[in-house]
Length: 118
Image (cartoon, rainbow, N blue to C red; front, top):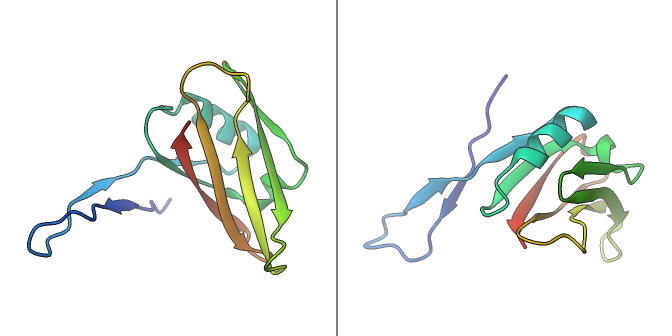
């Protein structure tokens, strides 16, 4: 399996040298695999989530210990060739949790979402 490496580059650099740190990647090819990896992710740091676009079609949920996370996509109103993808945390959960969103073309089979601590 090929691994995708994602870097966050700091804007505050000295003499043009970029400081970078790897971002953890959550990758799942099935609903079960994605649920297992997402629920185990550290909610205190940013992640990138990579998954098949089809997992977001039927508004399914990932059931984690702190509650259900909803997977869904909607047509972007400003650009109807794109979908906005979401993985929303339970609104009633206490403590840190991840909220994820991203945008991809309608024909994309794999999508990447940015996840951030809430």
